[in-house]
Image 1 (cartoon, rainbow, N blue to C red):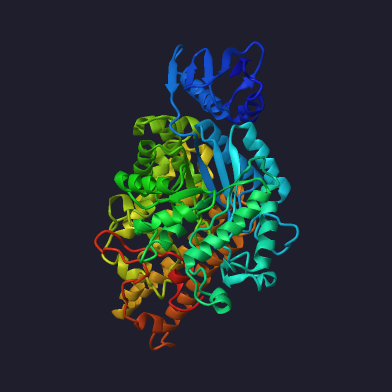
Image 2 (cartoon, rainbow, N blue to C red):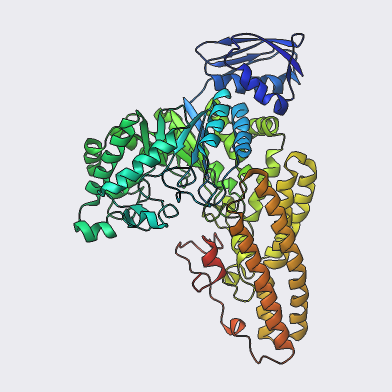
Amino acid sequence: MELYFTGDVSDVLKGVTILSAELGIKIAEDGYPIEVINRKGPLEVTNKQIVFEKKIHFFRGLGLWLQHIEKNNEFHLTEVPQFETSGAMIDVSRNAVLTVDGIKMLLRKMSVMGLNMVMVYTEDTYEVPEVPYFGYMRGRYSEEEIRECDDYAFQLGIEMIPCIQTLAHLKEALKWGYANGIKDTDDILLVGEPKTYELLKKLIGAAVRPYRTKRIHIGMDEALQLGRGVYIEKNGYQNRFDIMNRHLQEVVSITDEFGLQPMIWSDMYFRLASQSGNYYDFDKTLLEQVKQSIPNVQMVYWDYYHSDQSFYEGMLNTHKQIVSDPLFAGGLWTWNGISPNYSRAFRNTEAALNACRKTGIKEVFATMWGDNGTETPIQTALPGLQLFAEHTYHQIVSREHLKERFNYCTGSDINDFLLLNQFDEIPGVMEDNLYSSNPSKFLLWQDVLLGLFDENIKGFPIAYHYRGLVEKLRVVKERNQGSKELFHFYEQLAMVLSVKAELGIDVKSAYDNGDKVGIKVCLENLEILKVGIDRLRMAHRDVWFSVNKAFGWEVLDIRYGGILTRIETAEYRLDQWLKGNLTKIEELEENRLRYDGPEQFPENVTLGRGETYNRIVTAGTL
């Protein structure tokens, strides 16, 4: 469609050019005329005008204009932004590092949705020239790559903010020899050590150099073993609240040198005010001490777990007693395993954002973590981003409205994406999967002979469930050509799980009953499974390399290779037993126990949760 813009267009034309191919538009002097007006107030879109305050509002408005001009010759839309900042945090520190083009893809989607901030969470995945081992072989970004993304985001009305760690979550960064003298524990920096702050000055300087913003997220979360490693050997026992404060003061003095406005995750201060170390269960009498001691930083309250609006309101009001302008970070539950948990993400997000509006929070963002290898493709986060966007411009968001906006912004039906819930919300799991059971992960990776999760799923029609999902995804794949690779991957995953989910149970049952015919059937299924898993690996690889750098894929290659070699060993041992060369198969002689992981859940609402690959595949040491 050819368009011609008049009025206040100087700040937005470069962004329009960036979006033109995606939106199917072209600027032409004889195109449809749209007057552009930049002024304070709500976003207004008519068939003749786009009236906006911030640059990001224009790009959302342009999307709304294109969405409605197809259906109506005349229309008048008004949207009142509920937050000053609404955006996303992308985790690129759990093996998957988005390419520059991958980041740009998300930026374009976010711009049309109307989201105006992005953080790329880099623990060690950014270049620090003075520290060559920092991010070595991890896909770290060069300064030029980040600057290119920042420039791109700026043209689309999006602020990019560096997001790093300056205390904990630095295990990958600190594993090299250069860090021997600055570690408290294997992932926490040694507070009070001068070399620690020499390093942090280099890290902060390198992190902020490519960005135009003066804001920075310096982390500081989940330093649960702070002061309990090398620190206690050097300094004796000291109050961890004091250790935390001293360190934060030192880091803020560095950010002050660079003229930066820092923010931190708030959990450590709440944990230190709790008898149990729990973020959400703290002694309110200690909050005044926190308020008096904390330096000039913004606090980010992160919470991905609660579905009660009043709970969020209480936590937000408590934060406001400490700092005047806290931010809120919700979660899109992209870190549950192989597939997203949309039900929990949607339910918790709506409760949280309603609370943010009610308590006057100005800045919110959605986190997209990639725990344990980023097995879930980043593209699956789009429905959650759309939900954040619509709550940013509306007090009430209906499912029909969300569906229409998602269809325009992405070209896909949101219900097709929500179908991915069925990978984990299976028979035996409660509605909305609020305990985040992840059977698609543990059933994929678990060992056929060991079957650590077999007792959890016994008696449920799991294979039947996944067979039905294969057929649904086959249809979805064909009607979502823009996401065909993604849905092909999930179709292959459903096919593999339909064969593998209960195969370990079948093997054990046939063996226990001395059923050699049953074992031969299992061997035939193992052969089918090998072919399916390799196809799944290749489908996953296609999705990975469509948006991510190469580094990190080797981990998933190793995981897929592990399944295949273990299937070969299972075939070998079963065949040896059939031939009489083995009198018993030790792995199958063991009685099966229900998987008893560190997280305890009611058995009647969940099948359990396999958190990490190494705990799923073996009871041994990996």
